Length: 311
Length: 246
Image (cartoon, rainbow over all chains, first blue to last red; front, side):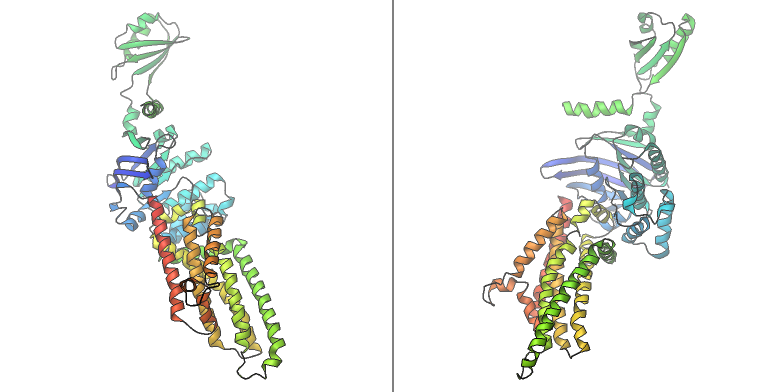
């Protein structure tokens, strides 16, 4: 099942009048992958997703969904797509069932197929008991769930979610993240967010946008491996003078943080952790903590998005 | 066919809020009032008319004026029916649902049009019931009544399509309604004070209704309404497509 290419974006560009919202965007998502779009406000995340969903036309470039070109075969491409916009597209005067039935009919579902799809989507989004409630009377979290139910209703292979967890409480966020991970197992999911831990929790790939350009793209898993970390934190009950720590093999710099805590900088892939542990045991320094400091996505994000602003 | 799905949703949307019901009630009340005023006038004239050979009958003196007045009412009501069609969806963010669904822009516009037109025809059907009650006491020229209703139905199509176009052009429903009122009233009075064969008269919405009210199914007038409808719908599709290009 996995490995099939479901989303291809090539040379995508979108202008609003003379302002360029996104440019030269290339990426692809395979079946079984979750891609996280990350970026500061105004970076072009929503614009990108709106172009992917066909709500906005691309100024240049190509979008393919499930093998169908969005510009040339919009109907086939959109049939393969489930989309949750930033603002869930809900009719407040309908009940959950009425709304989902309408969405299903727009996707050409009828009769028993329609009822089955509606019940499956409700079950996945925890809405089983809420079918007869008016959408306008639901809480924000439940409205968000209805929005997601609408996006997965017709069982599309490609799902695009624009900030799916915004405005939800921590429990709801956990539920939605679990749902997204679950959906990502047999589909291609693209979600945008400005919550960094969300990307680390849910996504396989991350694409950082800044000012309409992709500034970073990588697998989250390789980042989790953290082989390219360059920082080591340690806490010692009876710390030696700083110079002794600095003299350990592999240590490039030492920063004392007070109360026996130190931060050691080292070359990538040459951690002095082992040497430090041996030295601490021999010297009776009382080693309390020794942790490699993975450079977080946050640090990366700040570096990438602030550097551009200065340039 | 997704257009029918959208049309059904549009029509039901008018009735899940009080708007549809209130509109039906108010229009029915006003038309009933106008109808009774006409009926009263006819009853007073009846004795004198009886002695005039070839005098106008009940259809000419009651049905035609009531239908003419109902046309003005429809012109005032339809912009309120169509104002939310696209601009309301745009404002609520639900337009994304339609644009991201495997539905063509043409189907969205036609669906919205059919939904609003169905409401207008329902209104017209209720209006038609009133002259038909005269059948209880007298004979009616049913051909004339049918021609008049056909004229109103064609007018309704044009009113709906123009209202829909304005709704695609702006984001606020109120602005769409105001724009439609302006445009429709302008088209309505375009023939005021000009000769019947001038270009301005040809543009007028009310001018083309006259033959129908006289019982004449004028293909030229019908073509005018259909043309106005088709052009407005085509422009709406263009505008909705253009909105995606921005």
